Image (cartoon, rainbow, N blue to C red; front, top):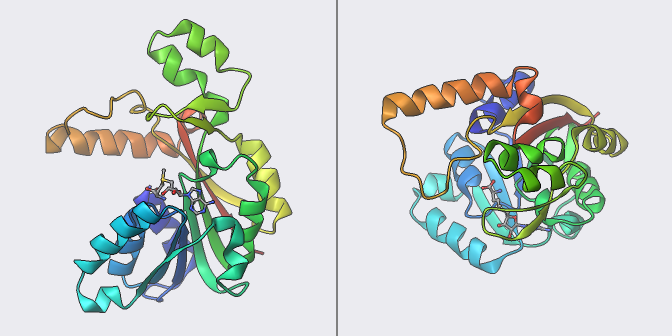
Length: 235
Ligand SMILES: C[S@@+](CC[C@H](N)C(=O)[O-])C[C@H]1O[C@@H](n2cnc3c(N)ncnc32)[C@H](O)[C@@H]1O
């Protein structure tokens, strides 16, 4: 994922340009810190005060030069207009958030409005076209059959969540002025790996990452990935 974001940034902006980046639903701020360390000016917006506190703790451990490029704020992604002027960011990330938003159109429109012309919108969503894969590959046939005609699923924490279909999301992205320009599959092979598994040895880990990276940008594999990374560009 991080590599895909960097690749899209490199393809669209001059090398070394300090970009204004907004991460909506930043969680603990992993991408916020990574992109700030890369030299960008990053704002993280997060609705959960506990997550926000965790991000602030992480940020406190950074050198002053990085801290001063980061702003983290409590707020709802659907209300970006209350916090920022339209067109004030070069890149807007919204990763792993749409699953928890029942009616995502307002959120998507609020994200697109924040983009300057030529700005990049990066969305990471659950793939509704491949919901039967996890159950099917795990031998849960009833679960696989139930997963075909729905966009509802249960996440790893047992919470109800919602998946998106690529074609529908692409149509929405066109409608909000940030049409789809590139897309990747994420977690083609590794979605079934249990959370509690220990990390493989480094040589194996680099092979897994290489195989996932290749599949995530190759048809037909990417179409059945657990997650989709959709990138749109503001016209
Ligand atoms: C699964 S986490 C993803 C965190 C991070 N973006 C990542 O990719 O690791 C989803 C985060 O989105 C936040 N969130 C959910 N709905 C939101 C909303 N409407 N506005 C802002 N944040 C939201 C949650 O509180 C949570 O921290």
